[in-house]
Image (cartoon, rainbow, N blue to C red; front, side, top):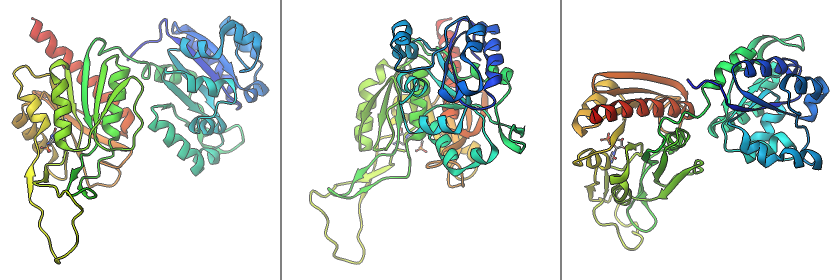
Length: 405
Ligand code: C5P
């Protein structure tokens, strides 16, 4: 886990009674060796005066987007670049909604759009506001965009109610923050990944494909970039935004994906095959749209190249990671696949169960390698991806050390 010594933390404080705890949080962050700058929203200033934070941090507090004096000292873009991490604590229901919708009408929301540092939020609000479907949908959107959500905890609330919605205690937030700071485990390395389904043409309008959303592969590519790697993601047709710092190569068919991977594989240190590649394609796709005639029709299929097996079989293969989606006897099938394809690591998950697999947001993985293994999740795919990429980086470093010895 990364420590906070020397890290630059932008602490966003929004309007909520828990704002009084943020002065203590700032002191704890400084005790951990971090440099802290504070941004307060107008709502936060109704609860605590900026002077309190200025006195504890020794730095001026930033409150306004359109104040020429403040912009002359350290403008919003400079602040956004300065931060190693942005922590919003407390995060009101309002700021979660505004971040989820990408608003930029005050200093804090603008900073969150302008930074490429990781963003974490510590929600604090009445339990019914937290449970409201609108807030929950906003939290899901933010989780999908890699925003870390710390808490909230359960207990007595300032409004006299009891339930979920309390901001986590300052020391818990300090500990959680260590987990979102980028760890440069893969600095100087090149990671190549595949993600999403492939599409195999039957005729100009129809195709064979599968239900892969690409979420896991995109989250893994983002995690690799956060670990400092150069990253290329070869993606089948999916509706996913390209993660920051990732080169994306869009392909349709398994053959095109194979070609895009083989063009780059000699250069890469790590190859992660996350794509759900169609095993078969139409032997001869029709050039014109096929008209319906008989009651039944046959389409002759031929096998697609196995991209992962071809990479692993190279004379000097990169560190190779495969996925296995299983409906039964998961571990035996996965381990068999790892050995058969000659992989360094395999990550297996259940498919066809509610709440996991292809289209779900959460997932769990059983990761195995020669002589070891690790269970990850269930948790959101974005967090799972960070855990898996760190595990890959550690195993890769072990192999690299052995080769050099
Ligand atoms: O053999 P199976 O399809 O179950 O193996 C799954 C693993 O192999 C996944 O990592 C997938 O990305 C990869 N694969 C591939 N090319 C194929 C089929 C699967 O890279 N044609």
